[in-house]
Image (cartoon, rainbow, N blue to C red):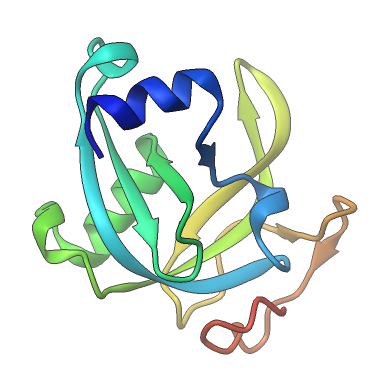
Length: 137
């Protein structure tokens, strides 16, 4: 995804993976591509961006916490990440100092460290973790 994709994002033609894009409170996904965005709107603060087989049109921008978690699971070499599994889940986060729903990543075989929430912002329990590709908690 190069400059054209960045320009399309600025126009709203692409979407970032948000809590409402997940089919349930949590979903096991497989990394299909890893990109490093370092120009245009990302020049001041370059980011790694993940794409997934299960959500082909979505981009997950790895901000600090999610980036640290993926690197802890699979090293800091993003070239080795395609084919690796992650658990994406809805949880409460903050943006610009205000609480809001967000998407976090975790090991696909472990219960996430934060409270997982449903589409109504209600806590749910993931035991056992969701079956691969199910989208169900």
